Image (cartoon, rainbow, N blue to C red; front, side, top):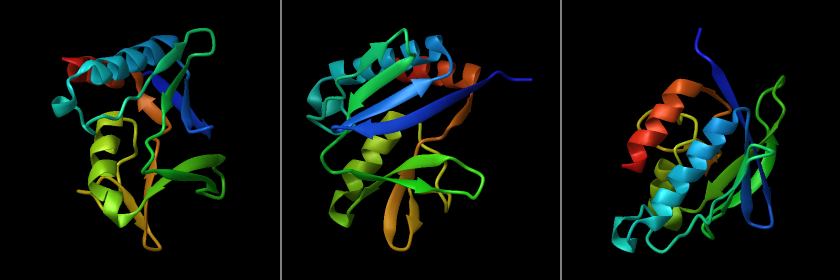
Length: 146
């Protein structure tokens, strides 16, 4: 049975906070974000955007700057699910949001497949995937850092 890892997400003062169930996963994610920030602007997913990731080892938390082209709100996504953060963006910001979402790695597979976001009532939405196979995510983060 694979080891599952959980990620809780919140937003405060334009900072995205991700709390991981495993410290090693939080550290690997912060290292991945730092590697992304260290790339030259032409090689970044969103040129000029800095994640400014901070790893808090004691709380297994990683914070990063939320890009200006995103907005967010809290929603109850399923009757038995707890509240979650939904990120949205406008049509004119779609290209940047798509590149950002792909570089952040942690979003759920969108519906319909083949896009990077959900389209609900005409609003483009991104949702952080809450449960992961720990080993596979660690491996993916290592591969992406290269």
